[in-house]
Length: 125
Image (cartoon, rainbow, N blue to C red; front, side):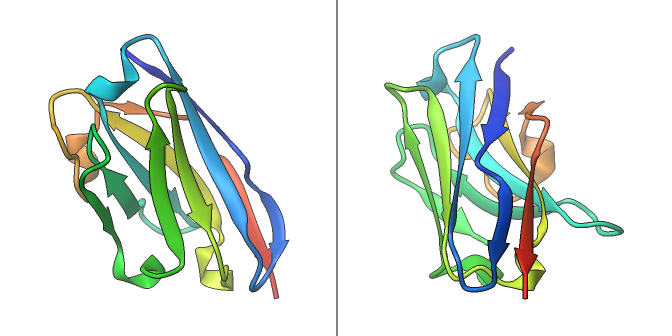
């Protein structure tokens, strides 16, 4: 098991930036594929971005390509999501997730075994 704790959410104006982080503990971080998901009120949880164990592979939902960047620091056991040019439609609770068995977790939440508690991102227009 791995414990995941997100941080960095908050209130930002449209067009602004936030950097989310996800601190992992419990097992060797580099053995997990990681992902970011988000859930807005009344909507299903949505894939945002994913990164492989060694950061060689990344993927994004089309709506955030060119604006968001996923990265990881295995030495610090931390996952990041840099979010630029934020829009009102980005407003949601953001969750990080870890996949024990996969090199790259991809976009399906079913591929992930462990989830953080979430951090709220609010975008004001």
